[in-house]
Length: 244
Image (tube, rainbow, N blue to C red):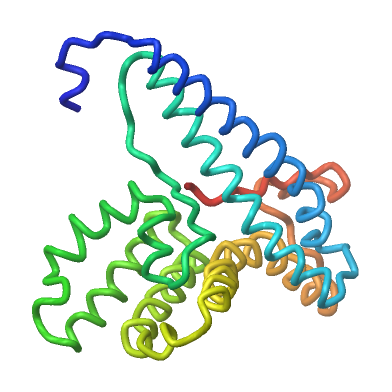
């Protein structure tokens, strides 16, 4: 980064801005994310007899939870850097306030989406090689972006979902733009929330429960990873979280 090599003078504005970013980041993490997490974990626990409404609310609560986590961490990192006189780019710019899927990716995890655009989408040809190749490029970039999050089918599903969402908006966006603007915002939030954050959650929470149920039906209980030879009551399974 050129800022590391250049002489730095820490100004009073850097200190106030840095403190504000740290405070807002802590608010997003502690007040929003950490308070939503217990409710979401409870609903998605395999033993929870969740009704459809509970699951729906938990899905949207989880979308807000991961925003609080990721945006909070980013704001705190920006604030700490600002205290040292180093200015980092905004990484989350109110992504749930946009009105279409394309704008969502210009506001959500901006460092990742910019990297995908500059180092994958544009080198593949972007939208300069015809309509069909543009759709192929969109799908390829989002699938690779899914694999960046983790080498599992849940994140392949994430990439497939967002690739199809961007392709659909490219094809039918002119009809979407005719909707009443608040409806565009609500629809974008619903579409952006019902992605592989939920797919990955399903893979981490629901799929193991289904496998356990199938095994129980067959009369055997599979050992969880790292638990072979141990009693089920003493085995604790750590569930990974997707990366920001």
